[in-house]
Structure formats: structure tokens, C-alpha cells
Image (cartoon, rainbow, N blue to C red):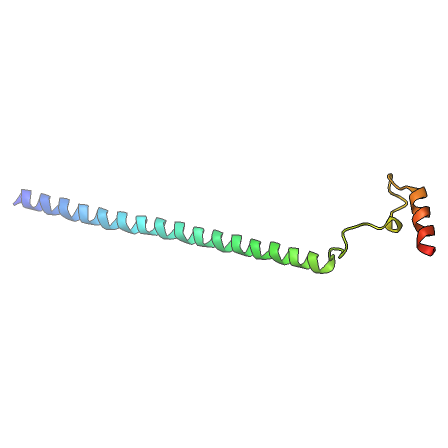
Length: 95
């Protein structure tokens, strides 16, 4: 009878180990999936924030309608400012 009880102890030990392993493995899988879902949600929120920022900047700083730059719109503080061209354009505009 001692061998039968030894086999039963071995069987129940293997069963307990299997249940314990299955429980811990399932917890690991669940935690990994939750972390991945949280990361996806965070990235989606970041994408929405960046999209909202772009839309806000577009609404606050609209692009000029004309692409050609008028000589009268020159900045005098710009190192490439051409005073002669500015004055010629101003004179042509007044005529």
C-alpha cells in the first residue's frame, strides 16, 4: 500500500503544480495584454492631441492665400532687405 500512496502523492503534487503554473501563466498573459492595450490607448490619445494641435495651429495661423510675396511686405529688420526695391515698388504702386 505504501507504493499506492506514494503514487497518489505524486499525482496530486503534479496536479497542484499544474494548477499553480496555469494560474501564474494566465496572470502573466493577462497583464501583458492589459499593458499592450494601455500602450495603444496612450498612443491613440497622443495622436489625437497632435492632430488637435495641428488643427489649432492651422486655425490660428492660416496660410496666406497668395504665394507670391509683394515687395512692399518686406521686413526692414531682415538682413536681405532691399531698400531700393522697396522704394521702387512703393512708387509704382502710387502711380
